[in-house]
Length: 273
Image 1 (cartoon, rainbow, N blue to C red):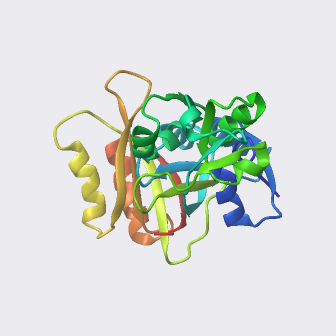
Image 2: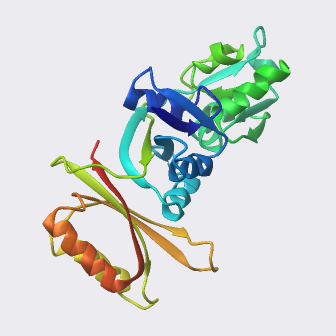
C-alpha cells in the first residue's frame, strides 16, 4: 500500500501516516499538499496524508483548497502531538544562528522561542519542515538552522540544538487521510462539506445553519475561504457530527442543496475528538 505525504522524508505528515497505517507502509513524498491530493485523485497512491489544522495556528489554506477542488474524499482524520526542535549543523551554537528555515506553520508555532532567543535571525519559509532540514543538512553552514521533528536530525545529518521549542504546553495537529472513497459508518462519525451560498443576502448563512440546528446536529467547525474565482467570493467549510448515510444528516444535506449554489460532501469518517 502506497501512502503519499508532504515531503521529503521525515515530515510530521509521514509520522501521522505511520501512526495511521503502521511502520511498514510504503511512504511516497510529494513537494506540495496539492500534489498529494492530485496523486490520490489519479490513483497513483492508495491514500494521502496532509496537515489541515493546528491547535496554535488554525487551518492550512492549501489543504482546504485541495480537498475542495480535487476529486477525492476525506477517509479519516488523524490527531497527533507536535514537538518542534531547533536543528543545526553538528558543532554549531545557538549564538551563531542567523537564519532559521522551516514551514510557515512551524515558524509561527515557535515564535516565542525565536523572539526570545533568536530575535535577529532571518526566518525563511519552506514548503515543509523536512525540505528545510534537507537544505540545512546539504549546505552545512553553521549560521543556518531549521525547525521540525527531532527525527529529522538523523535523516539529514543535523544536531538537536534545542528541544520542545513550540509555544504552549500542548501542541497538536489534525491531519486528513485522503482517498477515492470515504469511510463506512461507525456510530461515532464526522462529516465535512464545502458550499457556496445560492445568493448573497442577509440571513442566508443563518438559514443554512438552521438545517443542522432543527435536527440537533452538532457543528464542530465552520470557516470561510476565498474561492479564488472573484474578490469577495467565499467558499464555506463545515464539519459536523454524524455520517452522510445517517437519516437526519441526509435530510440536512438535502436542505443545504436547496439553499446553496454548490455543495460538495468532502467525506464522512470516524471522529477522533
